[in-house]
Figure 1 (spheres, one colour):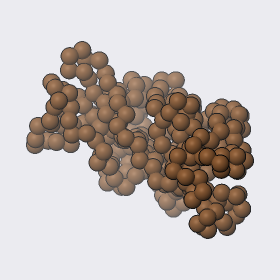
Figure 2: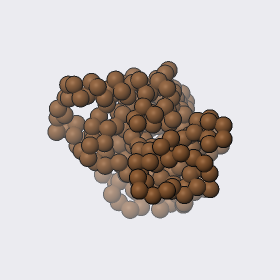
Figure 3: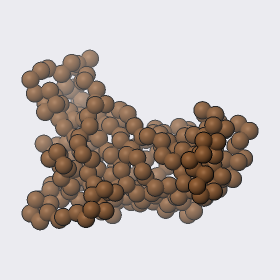
Figure 4: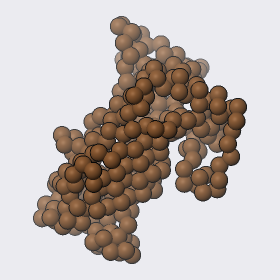
Length: 264
């Protein structure tokens, strides 16, 4: 099942990697330190709540999967701001075979990411991040593309970052759907990681030092301040991403074992 899930959602290369990682993890499990368990650990459970309950007409539930990619550790340095990942980013993907053509289909479903507090707040002064007027939060959002290439150990993820502060309004972003922050991530480390509830996860460590970051948009009269605080625009070579993610999922046959999946 996991091999098929990996093939449909990512690439053929992940299947071999995942199965190899699973065998290694079962043969020689490694204990985690307390620090690793709290800062970098598989999700407590496999949350499939964003999975659609409708499949294409003629779809075989055994060949359709709902998968999640959870990024819950690491950091992103964007210009002057070095942001730790303090809240999990969860992307849900639907994968399966076209009932008519047999072609593999992979669709983005939803991204959920709570806002994260930026240390130093809007002015970059330590300790001010908890003062309402000076606090600054950042909320990563999907910006149109996710493409994982395990064979070449690369992935592309387009993001935009919503900046949250009382003075910035509700439309202040770094990046957009038309001009996103495009991460071209290297994947030097892919292993297996059993979760607390028994879910087998594929753990992916990813890095990128080459992406550029544009100026803010939609920040109104405060844009110069936001750009100055963030050191934006920030050219390639001045930014860094190091992300730890976990990938897992289930087939629709597993999710709905006693009932038929609705089709449309």
